[in-house]
Image (cartoon, rainbow, N blue to C red; front, side):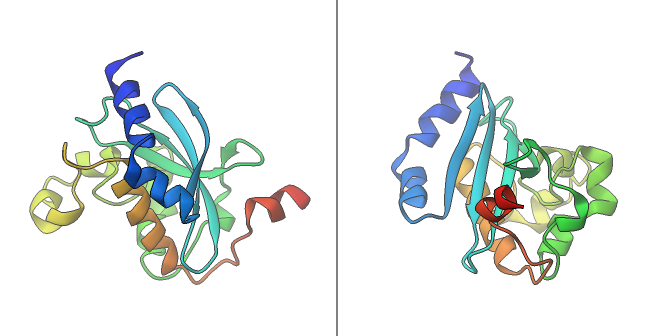
Length: 160
């Protein structure tokens, strides 16, 4: 097992991560090497799939994208969460150029192009003190602010 995968597996077994699972904040859907798919449930009850690449973890920030758990493909832009911070973080005008990456300082693709974020967003910039739990908590909070479109759960998605 590569060091980044080993670190990810350890963090997925941590009390902090498993506490989020127990509270139904998120769950692991799939993991192959350093790539993991999660389902996140926002405080509003909305659920969304997220696929993340943890290559170089924890020294390098992960990168991710919204994901259809049912189809195992990137989530179509027309059903991306919008409103509040979700419109900023899940920004299709920026994101599609970078493989669907999240436009926030925990995503390596966004962070690479914004060196000032290290000073502007000190609490939300990736560092070796951050883990998968920090990313999932932040994404969950971003989803809390979303007002549209009406997000389907993965069970609803499977039924349609």
